[in-house]
Length: 285
Ligand SMILES: NC(=O)c1ccc[n+]([C@@H]2O[C@H](COP(=O)([O-])OP(=O)(O)OC[C@H]3O[C@@H](n4cnc5c(N)ncnc54)[C@H](O)[C@@H]3O)[C@@H](O)[C@H]2O)c1
Image 1 (spheres, rainbow, N blue to C red):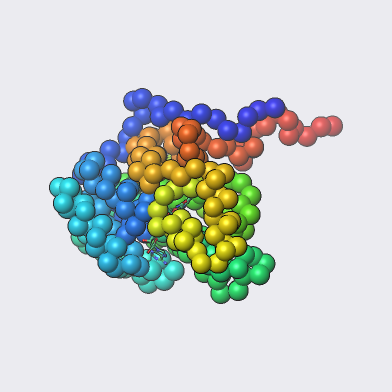
Image 2 (tube, rainbow, N blue to C red):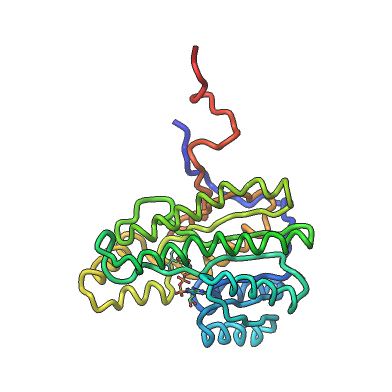
């Protein structure tokens, strides 16, 4: 049986997107993984637009980038608002002249009771932020990237987008959606020189996880502790490095890149790829 998990190794010489001198837009960059990626991209010469609904966190990230000698600007954006998404991309173009790299990273878990007990407004919000907003961001970003002849889009899915995730089934559904969307947008490279990839982190040491672990509800806290026991914490900087690899590597397109504790990042392939002949699926007769 063919393995569906393959080792990923960036191919030397295949780099095409050097962030130096490019313009990057990162959602959810006021904290955690988004902030770590803003710092890394700026360190590698990109001008970074830090987008977040959290103004103080976003401005703090900009301050950190500038203190390290990089270039960044904050834009307030709630990614669930189409107007905000359009304004965020327009701000990027106005401030730095265009858009080359987009990292759609803002995300949340479902608060309160676990599905199916969860309140409809709680699980709807998860799907809105973690999936529908990613769709909207990509839709608004692509035409602006086309103006510069191409670009790279990375989204943050999750390892919960590649496996069953009992603590939060709705989060898993949203992240599976991001993986499916990413794999299905591979055609954009041929059509518009835009590569679309996603990163699928295991459990990362960020405020998102810290909040769940500090939960006052003993049942939710126990679920969080069980999760951390099963998957040890990884640093946000490790995810940022993988995002940078996905941006740089021209061979990475339509890729879901898993990053879990203690193993190198690896591309998780779908069992079959649309349009690619699979001898096992040939019709008989
Ligand atoms: N921490 C983990 O273990 C882990 C694992 C896998 C995937 N992820 C994903 O990584 C991404 C980043 O999470 P993190 O761990 O850095 O969490 P975090 O809470 O530290 O950061 C998330 C950021 O997104 C912002 N945000 C939330 N809703 C928003 C909205 N509507 N509009 C704009 N910004 C919004 C928050 O203000 C925050 O700054 C998320 O998509 C998350 O689902 C996290």
